[in-house]
Image 1 (cartoon, rainbow, N blue to C red):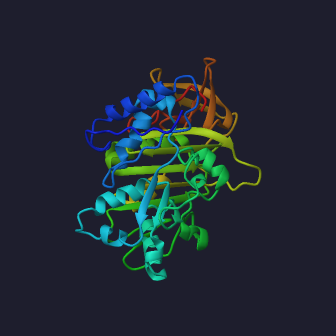
Image 2: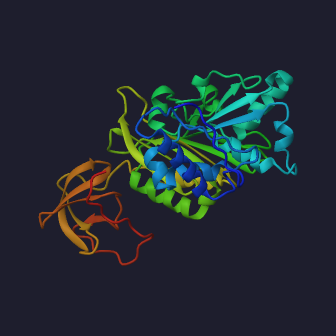
Image 3: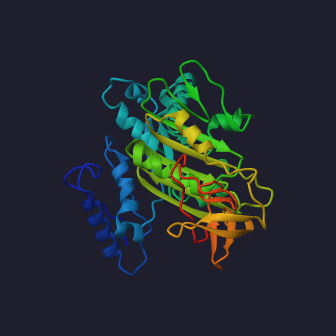
Length: 378
């Protein structure tokens, strides 16, 4: 099948009905038929496009999600003029920021038209917006296609195999240190840093978080659900790899706005540092709130009960029932409990609303809505 260009004549694909994009993709797939000669589909948006709706198409539309895999997002940045376009009040600063924020690869073009000081500032501004993006300097956009195609930047498991430090910011790689329980970076006047940074004039920023302590995946997913419900429209992209307590597999996730995808991937390699690391990219991000929420997902270091302890377990509709702790940290759950009735259940969190000592009466008032017991292994 030869190269073919299809044009959407009723406006750029970010502004028109998403169904038009789905229709064109279906048309391309139909023409290819059973020949399996289609190498890929390249979508070129206008210079003022919002990439969000295009990206969402590959997750939200069943036909596209079943037949296509999003490989990556490439943004061309004009090194000569980008700083003036990002300047507040310019009129296009938000569009420029969003295109950089969504990008997996930035082609920093026209680098021959700026001096070393200007080029350094451009790099800095790009990192302010998207700390995890890969920047490729070029002139006339002359770049090896191998750097742009089949890069699988939307497959976190794949890219982490090739680049273990993919979710690290440049400053983490070159000047990272630890204070207490979580890592952070130096703070300079006019900027804020916490393994990520935000320019004092920038609406779009990135927040990178890292932690060696194991995470409870039940709390992590609950926290992310809350963020998506309250701030989903402002979250442009987010991605990460999680060190889940009690499980030897990496939990990888990523999302666009409110579309979240998370799954268990490969095992941690022998000798590999088990560490949770992820990046949020979005508008008006509250760095302190994100940090606090993330740290609250840490697994309890010292569990209240041991194997053999008699407990009362919350079974949901049937209330609390007596049982025995038979295993700790089974498939990411702090407790596996064998009920006296013969049924086995799991407690995803070590909290009194789910598991209490046999002699302790059930509390009527709880500090927060407890998680339900789960009966399916992670």
